[in-house]
Image 1: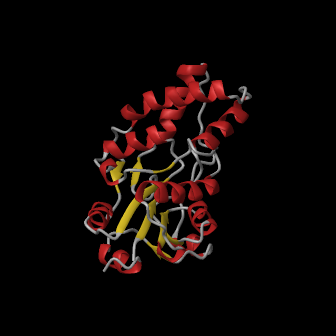
Image 2: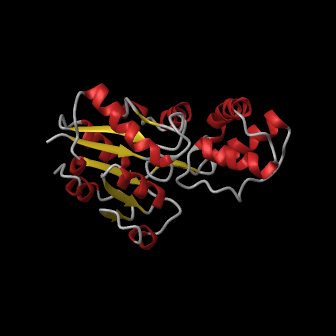
Length: 227
């Protein structure tokens, strides 16, 4: 039976070593002349568009599509440089898991991420992971994460010509928002404690499974029926 695996990026596939936050700060200063720390912004599990609108609210900048586009373009310019830091890395077991699933004709992988697509491609390309994902759902599609799951399923049907039953859809992420997003579409959610949330915190949201990380690739593959 065909299976769809939808992956989050930040804190799930990779860690950026704070590159995203620094790129946002640099973009804010470069484009709008505002120099302030953004540590009080709620990033985890949020979309880029939602995060930027939080920033606009903090600094009383007009929240319109023009300013949003300017901010995003500046952010995308700053991001590649910021990713070149020692803390930017692929998380344990990810290469092995992606490679194993890519070798299966009955498993399909896509992205379900709060990044805008160009930002997602920059992050994944930096770590040599972009080729595993031909499509996905991104912040370009909606600023609300819970609206991205249906987009991912629609694209899967359109591009693959496959109808995936809910029990054969897995959403992999590191935050309660990822778990909620997966449940919205009836998917089985797998939480990994590789971001800001502990295994205990993630279990409180009742995912299908929780892992400390995906270093035990065989256990992960068994959980999704790939072994």
